[in-house]
Amino acid sequence: MSRRSASNDRYQRKDKKAGSTRRSASSAKPKRAAGSATSSASRPAKKQPEKKKSRFFQPLPTTPEIKKWRRVWFVMIVIALAGFAVAMWADQTGQAPALRYIPLAVEVGGVSAAIAIDIFVIRKLRKQALKDEMAGTSGKKKHS
Image (cartoon, rainbow, N blue to C red; front, side, top):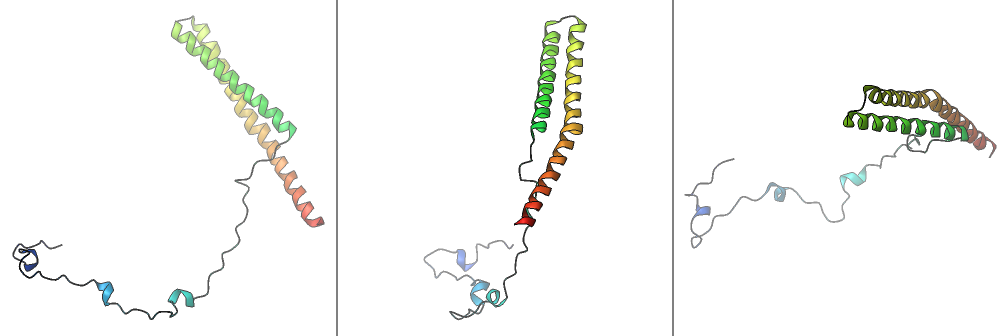
């Protein structure tokens, strides 16, 4: 960008004849006549492909057995949190080392059990419930 010069007529005193600025490039472009077709209207509109419904946002199916194992999983998490709280309390109050390490072992055991239940039991049951649901919905569509 160039610097403004104080000697330019545009920046002199206002009682003198003021200079004019250059017109914008958009005003030099030809205008369309009113009612003429635009270039975007002459092209046919693109059809949007149908989106597949993903299972990602739909709720997972549940069964009474999954609910039972979720309760067991939740109890293991609560046991782990309680073990952690007891271990922190024992460490803060300066209790015997056994009173510090036993709750930590309970915590690690609870977390490990919760992870194992989630990975090996609940996921297997959930996959089976999904298969059953998909088989049930596809069967209903065939009959109707």
